[in-house]
Image (cartoon, rainbow, N blue to C red):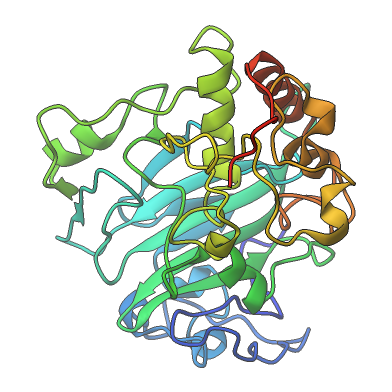
Length: 342
């Protein structure tokens, strides 16, 4: 496995280029510059137009050192996990924040932390690494906070691995018309089961931390962590609410799947679809209390056809464990749809 990676043929979408053309494919024989002999371009100055020239490989970022199916930071990288991660066909993911020297992120009680310009969020997808099976890296995806907004850059370890297109990137990450990080929120970030933010704040990496930050989302896959309803809502928050929120691309649907949505009609109970076509599976309401097999939500989680599956992107198989959890949650809901919600 080569330690320096070739930039994937299709760059993801930048905040100022929503729906724009992708960077042309890089030729297979493209040379890999030596970072030690090449001037380094700062993250703030990378663009979708110049990325293939200035950051053609992870090594050429001068921030990251890829080797042996893993990526480490050349300086200080802040590693973290998510309480409720996005499901991506059972891939494992390693996450890291690389802040600009001397800069700090700003705490936010809702949504992602406010990361300064020059921040790079690093996520490496892989398979294996259990039961003696060697770990196999697939892709390292960078989300780079440039002077003009966030842009996404995927670097592939395996040539056959599919990376999202520009429009697909926007489908998930666009919030109120701008690309934004999704996972690194105060209530979703963890290290060894606890929030890393107090330690990061003590080290000067986060400012504005309250004395009593909100609790973390419940671990969706830990039956002892919280009731079924709270864990199901946490999973839906991470896997659906980036679109199904008032700021997301599915806002017109009126279906809001964030963990803190309190209106049952808005999170789907007895709610008729605005426009779902064959994605309804012939069912009338998003959620029918006590009847998961009559609920559109469960139908879409169990579907694999691209025009029916939810989430729409990032998976080609059914996430059996989350389907079982959401099924149990719907089975436990009381009431009926004799008087449907709007």
